[in-house]
Length: 140
Image (cartoon, rainbow, N blue to C red; front, side, top):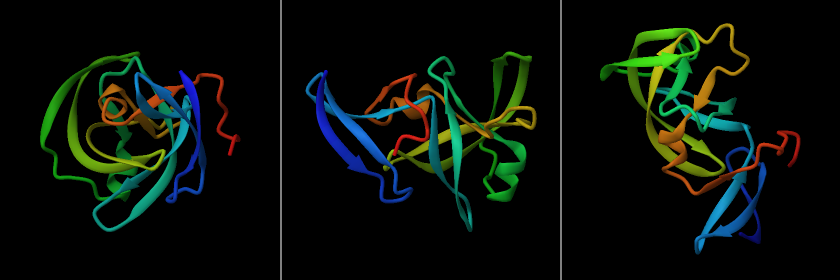
């Protein structure tokens, strides 16, 4: 892995270190990152938890309602720390580290969670990211 420099996310204004890994430029992100979520008639930037152990991404039911996400395109059986549940799935556009993605998000109550958005492997595989668990959100 070779340090390539730095890029600025024009949407959030945050600077990201870039590295070359397997002959591809990748952005270094942390376990918590600002993510831009595009709703039906609004756009919101929120802090999201990056979870490489989660196969799917998830969004809080209240945040999904606020952004008017939908329609519900399917349901999915999800195994989480709270057990198994069937959750509705919506597709929405997001931007993380300046890279846009369109992904499916399961909808659930995340009211007891610190972060209302969880970024899983499905989104991470769409971008070119290297995850540094020591990177803090205050680093700009």
